[in-house]
Length: 195
Image 1 (cartoon, rainbow, N blue to C red):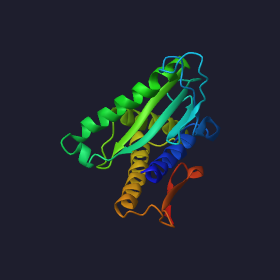
Image 2: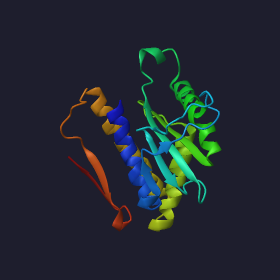
Image 3: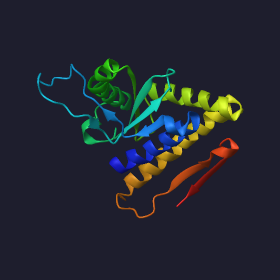
Image 4: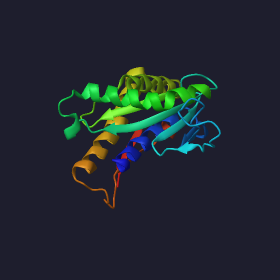
């Protein structure tokens, strides 16, 4: 589902760039593994450049870098049929935090897993990030909170729906992928879907 993660990640990059400033958002940041990650002493480690990551400067705290890990979980896979969707999301969140939270905290960085399920569920961190990005855009646009929050939720929901539609149609080599874009100069009032 890498292509579909990329679509969701592109939506987050656009929203973060509009809420903060575009230069504060980076795609595919380098993540150093840290000291306590099970690598033998004396071994040189190279930074990990993971394609599902986004780096922002000043999202949760001023002056602090936050690493977002965007992923879509297939809760309908045969491995997950006996488990509730919420438990699948919790398991994925736990494994991502075990892998990244310690090393990133050593580097004074925040880590937020943005995990969605194919049936449109979202983890607790996702909901907090939606609220925070809505508040950041609220300050810029001067609109009511309900309008901005609805816009953010709609942008993410549309991106998830497009990603899942391509997944269901097995269109990994689909030549024309629909994308959404927003005219941010008018406070996000113009939302476009084009191919």
